Length: 243
Image (tube, rainbow, N blue to C red):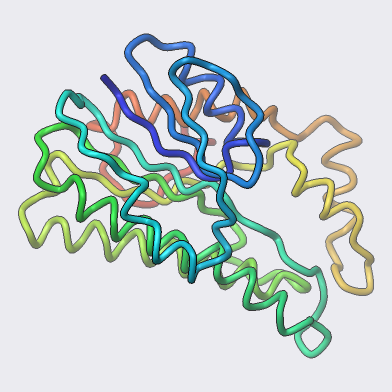
């Protein structure tokens, strides 16, 4: 059996991944989000607000059960938020904390427990953190998003380095995978921004007008290219546009 743990599973790329994975035999999916949008005999939903890190740290031990028959175990940290699109100095303090809790702290907590729970198992183990080009380039109005994705990239690199140091990296890989520009609710949020707070607004409006946004289900298929052929992908940093 192949087991998948996917955050942000109710919409966008996360939803596309659940749909795509359940098409394959011998798969079981555990989805983590505030709402469920699936009913399937191999789908198990965990209703959780991942930004509530106090609750998460108390309950994360319940998320990753023993999996004696596993051939592959995959954690996909997909949940994330763009946050307020405003310049520093104009942001709500609570929105800053919420963004980093969801985009970074929750991911680190889940990775920590996943590695602890499964590092001794012989099954192939993968952690895929959804990255972004925003983690490599400064974008005005996106200070929290850019910084959180940069943190996620480095967290992924350090995790893989530590697995190598422990001699576990042959069957345990960590990736930071950039999905490209995908037609999700986050893209809708971006288009609702103002030029005053986000100078690249017209560029993102044109993505939608010109049909340049990728479909979430198609993007999910690119994720599966990595998941099904992880041995071919050596670098932590990955981009679906390479597939």
